[in-house]
Image (cartoon, rainbow, N blue to C red):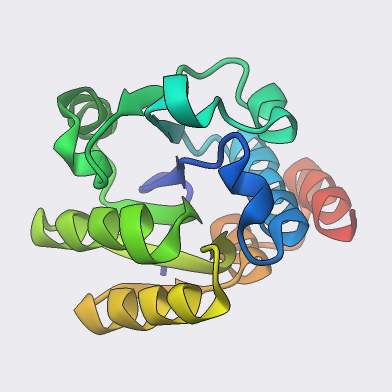
Length: 180
């Protein structure tokens, strides 16, 4: 079970034109936006990366707006773990549960998930919040990440697991996020 105190949300490379040509882009961005909003309510830190933003562009506007208080980690390695600034930020948080979202599932998401597992982190792949340019690569990436040891979750499953109880102001805020 994941908990808000032990988790960090990771948003990998949802940027520029690439984010528009992956399979089911609107659904992926909508689910990641829900996760970011829920993370803010539940006080779960969010890390996000941008792969070579000079060439690929920056994080898509709907997510960038929600991440205004955060700073993107720029990278050229496919795995986020290949960027020392990312690893420093992750280590500083002292949280072992990494909720992974982003694009592309079979490249950056896959390589990051594998390295996080090798470093001893528990990886929770939010399967309806990842995508690739083709359905086949998305599915292969998800299967490979699960086989490596990650747990598969959905957006709602993740949010309600972080929330734990159906009461109070946080529950009301989360309910609104889920319904949108």
